[in-house]
Length: 432
Image 1 (cartoon, rainbow, N blue to C red):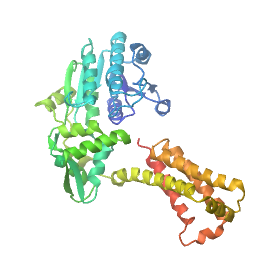
Image 2: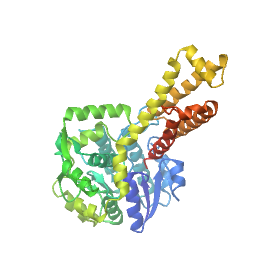
Image 3: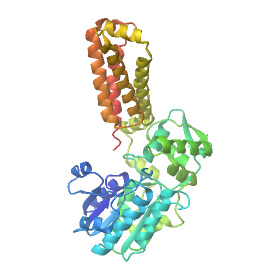
């Protein structure tokens, strides 16, 4: 079959597309940007924040036999029309896609939704609203509601955060001690489940809960990941729910990562299927998802798994530290008395009224770059501008005042450390 997979660039969508291809289907990935499409032959571009009518989807369904919708967001983009809100991405755009399927005669539609109570979070509520729009149509639909989706072969978003918690030295901080029940399913198994449902003509008009074969506590799951990475057991550190909610609220307003009210609430509630859900999933898809220990044993941890987990919390620390260094450097430059600033520039061979302008201009550039980095505005571009500024300062000062190379406090030698630090920060910014 020729299958359109939306959200194909995402963690779940990527595994679904791979499983469909392995099952012999012709996969048409639907991705968000032209750059992503250019990297995947045959891909089409779509935007769930804007493609809210059936007419927008009809041309993309030419020659398509089935559709799998994996598009989703854990956090809304603020700012009005054209932004990725829960209602747009999880309800309105999918409803338009499903209506286009009905008009085009594409009968097989698999909707990857979310397991949970709609009353708990706007994320789940909007996902289930999208499910309702699909179930109202005369199509051979299947709604799949996964529990926690993870992979021993890699991670993204919330699963990366969980790996990082598992890799912390000495202690593992866990909300409420980590006693919440979950039924994790690997992304590989979820992909094979979806592929099985697409290829099974008898699988239609079903709501399935995609869960693993065992119910474990969140603490036990994290401990299994830690042991898999080769780290000795750590002492659990129970975090009060109020502290977790506060951290999630702050993260919602200051970061773009997975931590936020949606993730915190879902973990606080636990995430398990109804009795018999696993058996129903196996019967409909023809695939039996593995236990946690089986999945981990089949994919041994590699050095990159440990690196990624240990670097997860160091990444924002490096960015914030470099931002503060640039901001502080600029503010110190502005705070220097005029006479002292002019004397310093004179030592460098710059004199006259232009000297103070040059000094303050350089300070202003430092503050601007530091603020841009602190606010995560075009981090990679800012990193390269910082590299250029470090190189310019080092060359200029090294030529104008070569004695600074031998200064006991090493003002120029320390610049050499900034170069690899900036390159590492730029490399770590690539989260996909």
